[in-house]
Every structure is written in structure tokens, then in C-alpha cells.
Length: 234
Image (cartoon, rainbow, N blue to C red; front, top):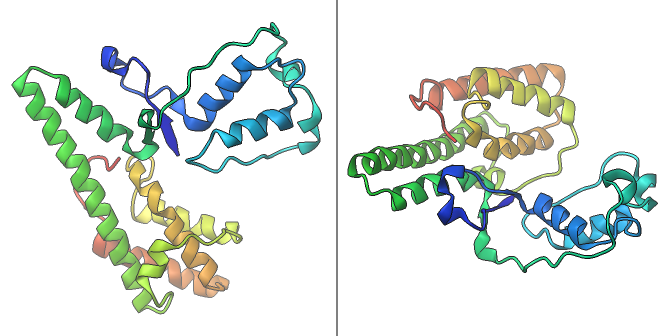
């Protein structure tokens, strides 16, 4: 996912957050520039998807509603269109890099040496935490491969199989959350959950083999992640 930085970021660094992700901003711009009494939900979705190049929007729910006008849901508005300035790619940042971008810009803007040192230390800690986590996930996968759950660490780390077995994946994710890494605190860990989806889809787990896998996962976590010492890997 890509996020848009505020246009006046340099003048309003205290905001400390982007305006929104690429899809939501494209949706707002589309709503401002069309007659919502005529544009259908289907047409709006198609137009917004064209403007969303860094993620993969999908439709859910009762798709038969797609033929209805947007105005029935967002409210009718004036037919006059608002001119939307063209956005530039430089306004986009990866959603996962928001904490780093915010810190880096604060460091660049401060004139206080003491504050800069504190921010720089925090920045370095964030980088170190991310590097530790990526290395640790690779080690966990390597250990699981040594147990026979996979044959190629690089393949597990570099591919993204479609997730079909949601029930089994949920159990694996819950085990990782409870015995390995609290994803509510260490949010950067979400980046690597596809790895466990790959392992789930590559193994035809029965209840007994899944139980064994969960034990092996906990063992690998204890070896490579537990007691890592980082306050928050974000």
C-alpha cells in the first residue's frame, strides 16, 4: 500500500501522518470531480482502481448494488465539477515506511542538536528492529524447512501463494501471535505473515500434523525471536 503525504507537509510537520492511502485519496478526488447523481458505484470503482497503482483494490459484499448511483450513498451534490490537480509520484510513500519518513523529516528539520540525537537514535533502532525481524523470519523458515515443511527458504520468502485454507492459516497466525511476536505491538511483523500462508498452502496439514507444526513453529520462535529486546518493531 502506498500513502500520500500532505501537500503542506514541510509547513505542517507536526501533523505527523500522511493524508491517507492512495485508494482512499483517489476515491475522494473522484467524488469531488463527478456528478454523483449520474456516476454509478461500478463506474466509480473502475475509475478509482485505474488511479490506484500501488495496491490491489477488490470489491466485496452485494455486487448487485454496483448499478446504483453513488449519490444514493454519499448524498447528492452540485453538478459542478472541482478541478483536481495532478498528483506526483514523489508524493507517494510505502505505508510501512511512514514511521521512518516521519522521523527522518523531523531530524532534517530540527535545529536542536540534543533532539536530533534522540530522534537519530530512535531512527536507528527502528532500522535495527526491522533488520532483526527479517533475519529472524528467514531463520525460522530455515528451521521449519529442516523439519520437512519446505525445501527452499528463498522460495518461501519470495513467493505469495493464494490463501485458500483460511482456517488453518488462522491457527498458525494465532500461534505466531501468542508464542512468537505480538503483532499489535510489533506491527512490522505483518509484512511477513504471507510466509506462513505459503507454508500452510504448501502442506496438506491434518489435525495431527498441524499440531506438530505449531509445536515446531513455537520452537523456532523461541530460538530466533522471543526475548528480542526491541520495544516495538514498527
